[in-house]
Image 1 (cartoon, one colour):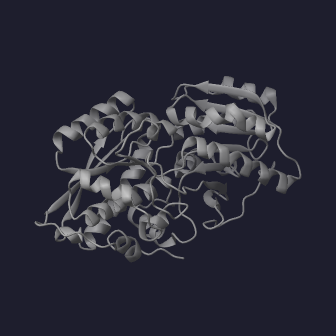
Image 2 (tube, rainbow, N blue to C red):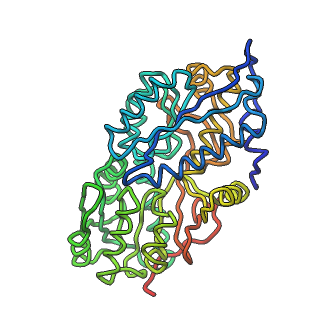
Image 3 (spheres, helix red, strand yellow):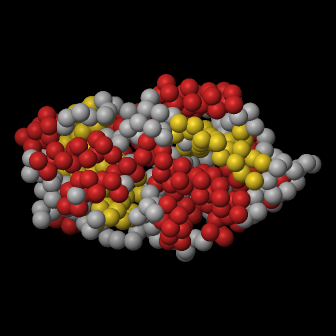
Length: 406
């Protein structure tokens, strides 16, 4: 079912409303994510989606239960380190006492630092970051909409190995792993090393961890070429490192389907990757992610593309858009911009319409830890120069293929 702008905005304000005694003229949401440094592109994509949602809410009449109050988005740059992310969030809390809720952090390492601050301030905070630690600390004001890294790790590899067997008649046996040491990668690899490889009969012939950003991938790629794995699980956290790994594979004759590559995170599907690495280098590359455009989301992707001139819509802007819509819905239902009342409404969420259609699984409900119930895994694949959704089946727009040499 195609999700229209009207349905999304209406879905953010369709539940019974509690009228406030006095209507506010403005409601403030905060955005803290990297807008400079190695992860700036991901934060900028998020910001584009968040700003589009703010404009949509305001164009539809604002927060109805507050007399049409307009939403204002304040933005803070998390920079390129956890310390900078924490400092930016502390500035936000000091400078914006009227904040009703906020979003993101993007890199799990940054989100962990940001939410230490927002939790103390009792600011309800949405994130699309993956690390299980984010919602594993007993916090009450953090809401994680992506499947956690552990959940992704346990679901993705079986799906990918089944694809290989269906396509080639052979099940991969040897895996190479390249990962950075950020929080999401650490969470993802814990179950992989702990039991997933054993359960799936996979032997790790390379298992290397690096500190981002990479300055040279040559040694890492040489080890992969020598070990001759059946596929590579690549877990960097920024486009620059993605490209460096792909360039290295090309230099050593491992691109063009000769070594299937599985990446994790929306950064693996940015336009810069194909522009810089080349169409042949990304062909067949599979991307494990938490959201993205697919069947039913054609309208919002079309509007986003027209607005931003981006060639497609990825996890970052789509989930940021959805999180603004969820904050607006919570304020509207509460009939108040008070952050604790907003948090109470988020904890009570349990719906499958409106903004829920933006998230794989189509269900907005958060458990006692703040993890979204029924959060489904999404897999994209680069085909003919663009990433397309192949999983889940309900959102797929193309059939997955197992990369083979050109």
